[in-house]
Length: 95
Image (cartoon, rainbow, N blue to C red; front, side):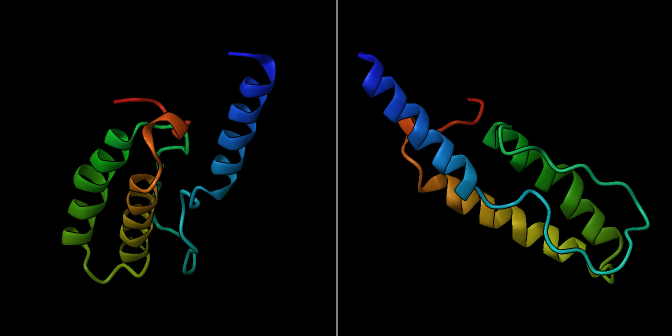
């Protein structure tokens, strides 16, 4: 790979990083708990685990929480966006 092609690859991935949906949705009020979403660089499997092992159980435990549905929607938006990115353009961890 020549340096121009390498630079194009880096610039493309940087642009995609900036397009990645935010990890956290807009919050309603102050959260009465700590929640730590994965980062943009985290593997998709980590996002799925966060959804399945943290957000969904919390939503079942407290269905009236106004923020948990927003976290779930944000995770789904992230997963949907990531599914549109071809493998060679993915900047996040594999796995």
